[in-house]
Amino acid sequence: DADVTQTPRNRITKTGKRIMLECSQTKGHDRMYWYRQDPGLGLRLIYYSFDVKDINKGEISDGYSVSRQAQAKFSLSLESAIPNQTALYFCATSDSLAGSGQPQHFGDGTRLSIL
Amino acid sequence: AQTVTQSQPEMSVQEAETVTLSCTYDTSESDYYLFWYKQPPSRQMILVIRQEAYKQQNATENRFSVNFQKAAKSFSLKISDSQLGDAAMYFCAYRRLRGTDKLIFGTGTRLQVFP
Image (tube, rainbow over all chains, first blue to last red):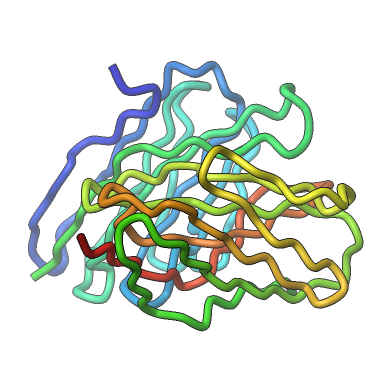
């Protein structure tokens, strides 16, 4: 089983719909992240959370919200989806207690298409 | 703000040959981490190699090695004895030593491997 699980794997929806992407992890990591990947732009940070009560905006948080329901779960919501939010979305985790420089571990991504 | 630049959108190499992917970055900090991630068509994000800026020795992982030039702010990835399975997008990423451990990614280089 994957350590970082994202659901759904793929989603097609319409403009204006509310969408929730979910991420759960079994790694026991305290930090979780949401990125989006667009062709030619690499990955950009949307939101990150250091623990259940610590949530921070990334560089492109407009139009998105997040919820850290538990240490192991971090969901990303699009309240009213628009076509330019079509992208590949990644959840990642890291362990602050494992020492500095630990890499982030990524889920397999959710490909979201908004028509 | 830190930035990461990958100036080669696409590269190609023949099987068994060596290829080097370029990455430059901009930062005013003296201590940080650099990473190379591989994204195959399956779209997973797989850590290839990590370099601590305070270490002068270049990191190596089997057929993968880096040429880290701190003064020039350059962090290239060399793949030796290229294999068909090396075909993927490769992303260079930067992380601060202290504070938030969010990653700043380059735009990626697509590597093709020909038999």
